[in-house]
Length: 301
Image (cartoon, rainbow, N blue to C red; front, side, top):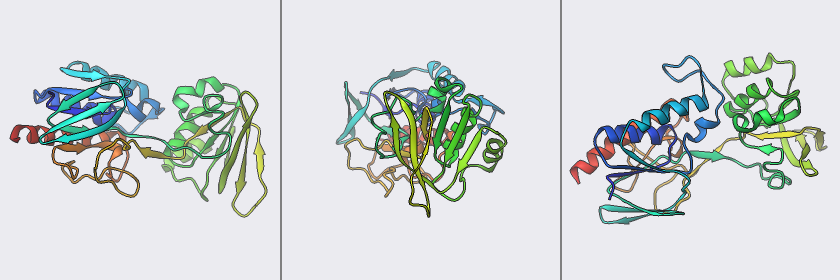
């Protein structure tokens, strides 16, 4: 029996674990990986205390901090369901069962898929969802980044340093990411931004060799010859495990200001929740809040 089971080990989950462990709670983390989306991030310039740090470096700092505390960490597991049994919670993963007096859901988000022909066929064959992970594989090649928000701009900033040419396909009439990132990206001569563009299909033989797209107002499909495609069109919450918990229309878990869900004893934090802004520093703060509330709950129940 653990005092608190934390689902996920991104900024929210790791911070929650550190805070809970400092309160001398018995903590178990159940997670597929360490770092979540932060591990995929390139250059981070807005995390307090670091004028500049890469995503993997920041994850390393989080992990080092976690290792200084008595936390049971179980990696490579996906939570399938949570059962409520009185004041006890049974958490079932694809490999094991865990029992806890409280739960903090900090499972984050995952990349949205395009849903176009060729996407599944060429996944990991030139099509990827992580520029930080796979960008170096496309050195000197022509690539396309699909999206117009911060994740797409981050991927673009990484790839203009590596690729021969980068095509940024954005489905709105202007980029929506941070202005400072837009300005920095547009300074690069090996970049072409195509606004109002929607991807129609991914093409290739054994590997990606191109894609088609349409521009609003033009019914004709255009083709770009590229050897790599980076899909950066947003994220969806990892909230699909079986439990009757309140979610909003975006499938984010609804929490109040104290990180409480509609189920007594279950808290949630970070990008999996309906907290308005999705930022590393906000997720970490939400994780701290959730751990404090879990401690109060466990102490009183």
